[in-house]
Image 1 (cartoon, helix red, strand yellow):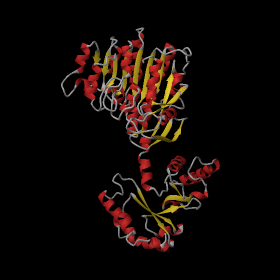
Image 2 (image 1 turned 180 degrees about the horizontal axis):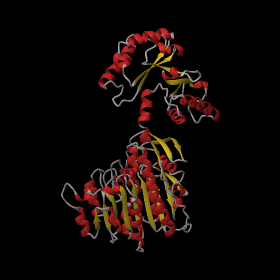
Image 3 (image 1 turned 45 degrees about the horizontal axis):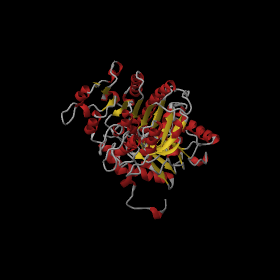
Image 4 (image 1 turned 180 degrees about the vertical axis):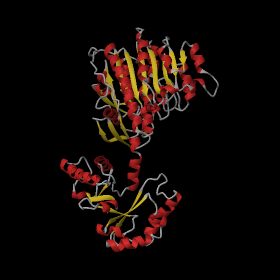
Length: 543
């Protein structure tokens, strides 16, 4: 705004008029190819009438601009008196003021209405507006909207929280000095907001087991990528209730791997399954590739029935860490081969290709059938299968929840528990909610929340069983957090949540540990992820 700041090369022609002219020609006489309206606001700093007259002369040399129906050339700043507006071409529009009175004809020439934000409030954009400030802003917005015009304020706070609050208030045009950031924020709006319209009811645990008793059975549920923000996003979307939040015993897990501050699922899950830190990408083996003692095998040695369930690929890092040994998590076919030797009773999830459509041409289902397993690639077979040892791998059954996956986790858990309950033998189940992690990698709030809610419904089924059985320990945790999710807005009353992701990868933040059933109290506090395994070994006398 000062002569010293002027750069003679940065003219209105070079910066605005010529680029607009080229765009309009390219888009077939439209400002945007899709026909949306573009407002070109020109802020006059010198005397209004003379400056505007000079501008009009220049615009007359750009017929594409003045004839474009989707371009609104709007004059702001030193706007001439409304009584003179009729003297200017009809393609010139003006920036109105809420304090002025306009005739019907003058309102036709107004493109939007603007005001100084500081005339109504001194709010700095943090927290919430005061009741009086909100009332002042709502009154001016109502007045301008009654004119049928959009409203803009200048001198507004200019960052995320302010953008959200002003948008919710009904401000139509946001002033910003951070054009690209504001553009990105609203471009991502649909993927970072979600409203859940069908909340599920939650189970109230009754804690029926005897105090001080040891558990006989174990259910581990791993919500891949689930940190506190993911849990609270589900809590918000489910109208302020989750099954997992009804569990009174909570701790936290440190998820670092042996070679990285930020773990991946292979090292994170291996720490839980073996009690040892290892390198990222390593499944069931230590940092030099030696096999580690996977807890599943220790249970099997003690005549436990075992099941591994995932609503992802059963050869992925998390489920694979409970039965396989591999220095590379992507070796899916080799991981599938390890299952042949595992003697795990039940395997449910996706990943059929690594068993049936392999590069070596071997169909592992044939070998599994010879070992006494019933096998299927159709998930609905779970309702009719009679064997106590079975494998169902159906990729169509483990699509994302938002794309129509049914209650795969709950049905799989209930079927496994029902089968194992027919025997007096103890059992171990590892169930993974795999796709919370995928939603985090995609920075997709709907994906995250719908997967959290589905996982929580399976938790509700597990809680019911623990209360009925009274000899089962339920342990719920995560291998890591994914997405660096923070919650920047929400409404518990209507299930709306707005998130912001800081990364498309994992983070190093602690993850919660929820424990319910006999022995749950030992999981209170902050533990290394490896300590979870050691506590389980002590509780179940595996050492």
